[in-house]
Length: 262
Image 1: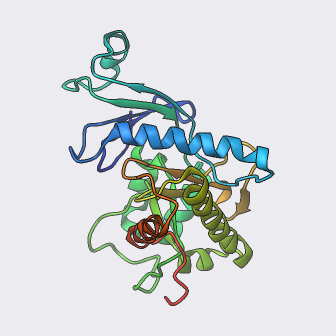
Image 2 (image 1 turned 90 degrees about the horizontal axis):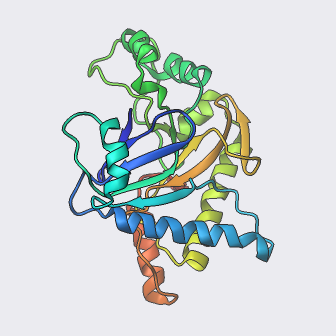
């Protein structure tokens, strides 16, 4: 079943926990090979950090295999699992990030979904794939009106953007919001100065944890912060030019990072 789609391609999974398969069937300018190589480099850096006494709190999916269109044995077994008309392409097999449970989805729908769409959203299989993007750098421009009738007939729990004012509105404590920012800052430092990767266009999401590190318990339920999508990441040099590259990537990304002036 397809559980997501982005500029690089589509993402598929057979179950809530287990593997996910990211297909390179999107924008031709995006490279799944680069995604795989940077993913492996990042995991290697994180896995070796405890040896230095640093315990990173970010969660990154395990990355298992890079499959090519020429891997005939693999495709002979797996191609029929995709819908008719799909053909072999580059694929990354990795760990799926588990979605939020029903109670969390119901809370988000009750608070933020247009009332005339609520039943449809809760009954939708697609919206079971609920991950939350923590937008610490943006507040909404419209006043919250939970009972309003929708004008645009659109709402999705996939990669739901949770702005900082919504976190406050839901009662997520200041120390927890600060904790989100601390994990992002810690992760950027590790990526820049240990993995030597500019973290261009990565995604941060809140989702159920895998293990005991870096967990929160809030109105969203138990969750951790995950980082994913590395296809636009590039190596950075350890000099002024590399710093400028990292700064450019920071400002270009979605509004995950705090913007105190806003």
